[in-house]
Amino acid sequence: MNRGKVRNHALYFLGVLTYVVALIPFLSVNLVKSLILIPIIAYTLPIMEYLQPKIMSLKIGYKDVLLIIPPIIPYIFLPYDEIVYVLIPLALMVLTFTLYLTKHTMWGNVIGTAFEASISIVWGVFINNSLFLIPSIYWLLYIFTGALYVEYKIPYRKLDKRIVQISWIISLVLIIGLSIRNPITLITLIEPSIRYLIPGEKLKSPKEIRDLGKKGSKKDILFVVLLAITYTLSRIFPII
Image 1: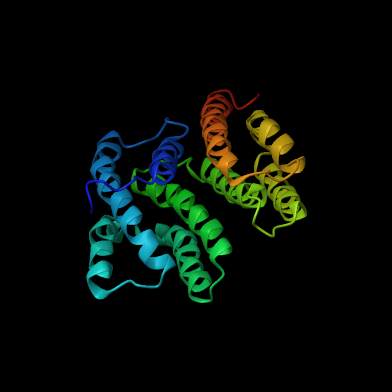
Image 2: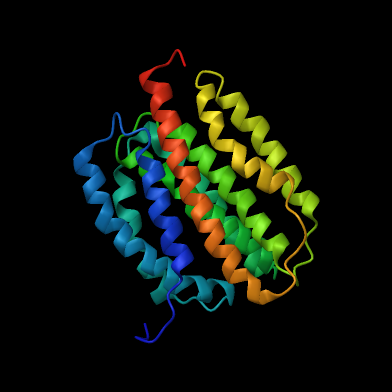
């Protein structure tokens, strides 16, 4: 990679938060595997950054494919009955490739972002977090609709805000159904519900996209912090 290359900070930021989500609620995590996962992630994220533009332009070669193999190896040793969880990010990855191949770049960006968030599912299994699934689903649906929200706000994107609203309404139905035994976790959904159900007008200029990203990053951190606190409390005090 060129030393002067501008880093894809959003990819790394999302990757780090995805790792944190995989640890929630921190009660049954294998500490050794959690530490082993860190260098795996440290290798995976730069490879994802390197391959992303190649995938978007469909200029990926066999040498590039070889780079994907090392970060996949640890997951081959997952328990047989938990391999099914790999199917979710795998399906999103295949769909991302398909969308770029068919020149649906915007949707490729959205699904590609959701793919990165979905890796929390695999990481949660890897570190033996028996309670990972609900936080990971919260995170995946939040990031998916968030990616749609960003694409809607971009001035030159022809995306109706109703797509964002419908996506979040469907997400709310799914999440609420999963949260019957831990309703306190639903507090996490207040801010994104306001943002996604009332998305406002499009940005007036592409120059505003950077500020949108900065504000979005702060809200992503808030979401993860609230998710960690509320879900952990719901497991410690199940009567809440």
